[in-house]
Length: 405
Image 1: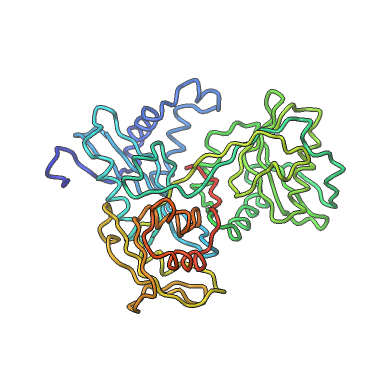
Image 2: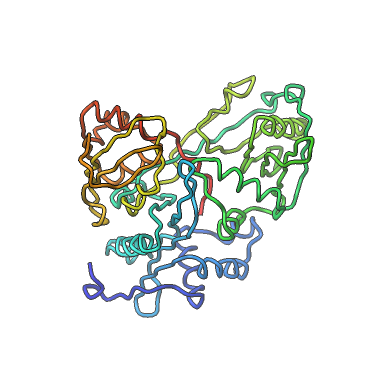
């Protein structure tokens, strides 16, 4: 649908649109006054906090006269994909007032936003979906999980099991050791986002003042891990826990154990492809897993040109026949030569040919699903030999994505 076919205007939002931007967000996500008060936010604070979003993000809006009726925002971020740092876009604030729904406004705004991402060299997009089926129609697919856990106080590993020579210190939210630790972790962790100023603002947006950061240091004073948590009504809520080595993991759990007399339960989330139950001596805990972040390759050719593959495998050339009914520039064939740990789009004759849609290609290359798994689900077409070789060359590791923006 072109602009002339409907009586609305599409344009960039500026800080002058802050009131309408905030009003649409609050209406669409039903953020109540009670919820705002519980987290200590006032209307003027929310509006002030949204200023950087409109300054740093690419926000498109659809207007009926002077009234904002639909919007999409894209945060520019960086993401570690198999040890290559990609510029990406994190899509958020996807809202339309209900009386304007069903007119294709989000489809138009999404296409324009993804087109801009391509122009800026952002070959991958992420979002947290409120409707998985809807976003799948636009070419998105699940690429990460969120694992939530509950541990009773008598299941926490006793301190004697954690002997380390290091120590833990509680620090301020803006402590450089804490923030630098996340950067170190992101640079070595597939799927992790490198947090810029906007990402850190979103990280803390709804946390209460009692939220605490604890950093683990080794005996030489080097920070190696941290956790962010809240103590409330005899429960320790762990927002995030990262560690650079086994020593830091043990040291942080030792710190958790030190709260034994203060809590009845530990609740938290993890985004790594590991089950906490195996780590605990009493592994009879509650763990739930659910899909978390969806991803979409915006520009297939640009994505492949930075893509890292298994450097130990033999050279091979694949023809990818990609179906993308939303972004026309991806709806074609790509010959990709995998050599020495890198991929190159080439004119070489292919050794194998595989066919899939953009959703499937996205989840495959990001490591969430293997080619064999997707083949069994009839999401990939190709010979069994092609599927086997493709799985050998593509690195399989589920992305660690903890940021909700």
